[in-house]
Image (tube, rainbow, N blue to C red; front, side, top):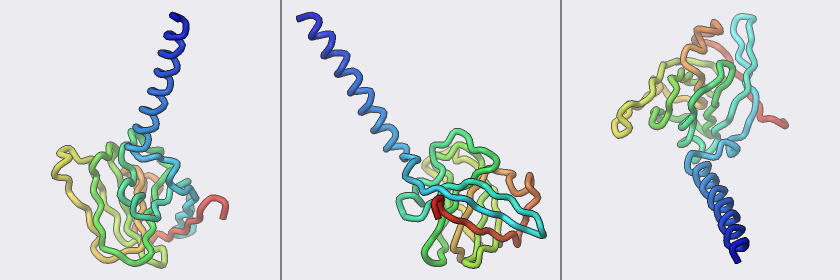
Length: 162
């Protein structure tokens, strides 16, 4: 009887841990939900290709880079909209300073802004593009300076497997 109770307790504990981990992962945004791809950045004969996650629907636009404790230099998240938009971005639950590049429908970066983590989670500033955009690229703060890219840079992206 004692063996059976111990076995039940072990199985129950394992199932509880698995359930809690699943709930935690879902609540913080299951990172596997983001399609992955590559982004090619070119300007004046220079180019850099980086891996990206693609936020191409509302639930992914809302989650973005929240809850990430670190972000590699050569990495980005590309927000893809089906139409030009004026939607703003904020840094709620985002722990790493970011640069955001607003990009026209033809793939040209026309505005870059620095976004700082939000300290007061109830009153986070919202970052807006000066004009409608089709894409937005979030990268680690300082990315554009580090790699020598500026306004006018051209981007091209594709999903993995395409």
